[in-house]
Image 1 (tube, rainbow, N blue to C red):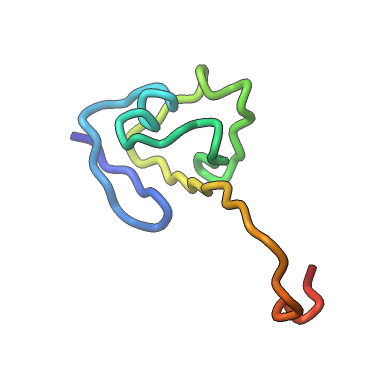
Image 2 (image 1 turned 30 degrees about the vertical axis):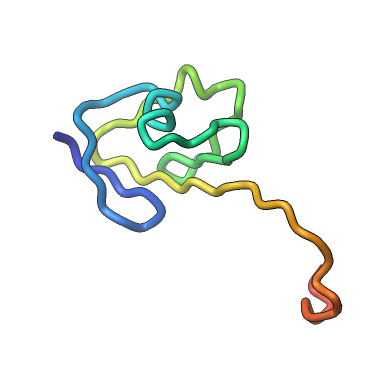
Length: 77
């Protein structure tokens, strides 16, 4: 087992693996997320070449659809 950090939480995976295999292991659709490994955003076209390795820190952000904030955003948008 190797230790990694995903969205600030420690995780263990069986072995180093390509990013698409990692995402598939957790039923994450690669088309619906943005991924950074060790602070570097991985372009969608580079997913196949990106590997998750021991000690890596991943940030995975899911795309979320939404509507208007009805003024509750305080003008931030």
